[in-house]
Length: 249
Ligand SMILES: NC(=O)c1ccc[n+]([C@@H]2O[C@H](COP(=O)([O-])OP(=O)(O)OC[C@H]3O[C@@H](n4cnc5c(N)ncnc54)[C@H](OP(=O)(O)O)[C@@H]3O)[C@@H](O)[C@H]2O)c1
Image 1 (cartoon, rainbow, N blue to C red):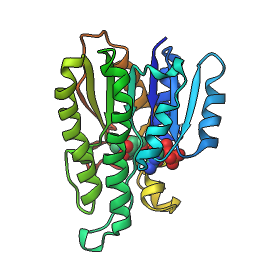
Image 2: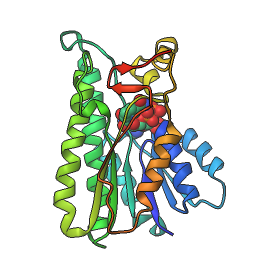
Image 3: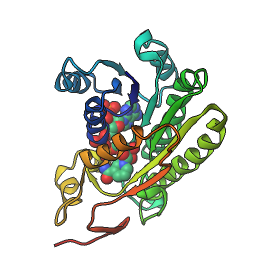
């Protein structure tokens, strides 16, 4: 049984990825800050999917290192790492941006991904085997108005994915990036700081992706034979043509 480590498993894409990979026969390390959500997920997965829960903030390097070091032997040899934890915080012109939001995005989406990868990688390099999928975004490839720092954080994920792929090549570790367009999750609720009406309006008038759509793709990617690396995928709702161009009915 292979082991997959999923960050941001307490919600949205990460939660759905846990369900899809559990079904695909993986043993799961599930990480997030909200312990009770992870417990609920583990219950939903049932006894046939072995799970180990880790509660930490990806921005806290010491906490990341301690959590990964605490993995019991049967979960420690991570085969698949899905760097999914992340969020947008705010949507404002740069001159009105809140530096606390900038910190949250750069520390979480970029440095958090680095800390988790750095902590998990010895288990992969030692065995010359592994598969890392970074969840980027269409926003990392197409900067939109008021998206400034979120777009920059995801552009960093794109650059890091390429850098990791090159550096980890000698170790037979596959590194890939999945770039979703609009997915209906808690993402917009977080971005708009609990304004549920504004968050809901992001997904009105068209059919957004569901977290399960992205999870299906992830399950497909991690079950390819070892010589195949689906290195970069842009996954959009059919109604989306570009980051901020959506056909609404
Ligand atoms: N939804 C979209 O339209 C969309 C589009 C493109 C890319 N993405 C990307 O997809 C990924 C998942 O987002 P989602 O749409 O599933 O949003 P979501 O429902 O808000 O889930 C975000 C997940 O990340 C975790 N997380 C956030 N900050 C964290 C931190 N500092 N430390 C630990 N965990 C943290 C959250 O867990 P806790 O709060 O429990 O810690 C949660 O499980 C993100 O990287 C996002 O940027 C989303």
